[in-house]
Image 1 (cartoon, helix red, strand yellow):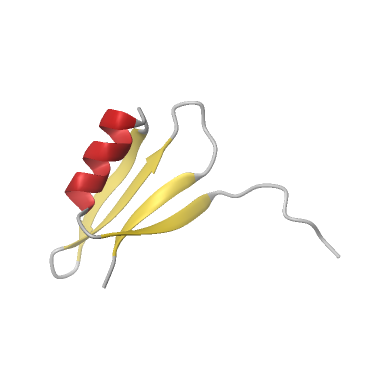
Image 2 (cartoon, one colour):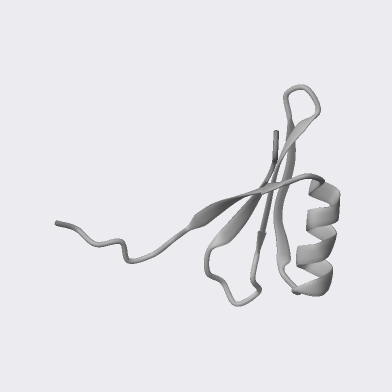
Length: 62
């Protein structure tokens, strides 16, 4: 049986992507890794700690 040795990305549902970006980058000093628009006003947003580790994908909660 293989073991998980690393987590690359964690999906975090958020009510407001802009507010979540402000919190993670302003309060926790995370870096904005991606903010890519796609589709009908949707966007892919990722933040990560500056020292590396798992990125957080800030996805809209629905």
